Length: 100
Image (cartoon, rainbow, N blue to C red; front, side, top):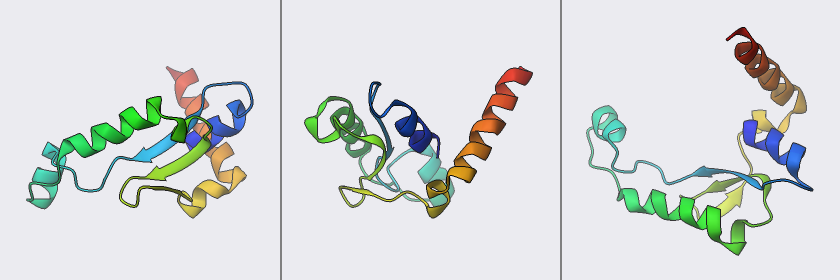
């Protein structure tokens, strides 16, 4: 929802925003502890972040979601498509930030 919000806010004249699932069940400590499996090569996750930062494929995205499990842009969770949900999130974030 945050990335969708930023994409809407900056879609014309700002940095391009993308949310990325680097790949499910990569070989991180969290995956090893939570699932008891070695997981995939962490380099797969790192490569997609490099591509997102530098490639033409990601140059014109504005709040999109990229699923590296399927190597394509997909719709985010349905809750993110509702502007009222996004506004509620932004309001909560602003409240948390202003309280600190």
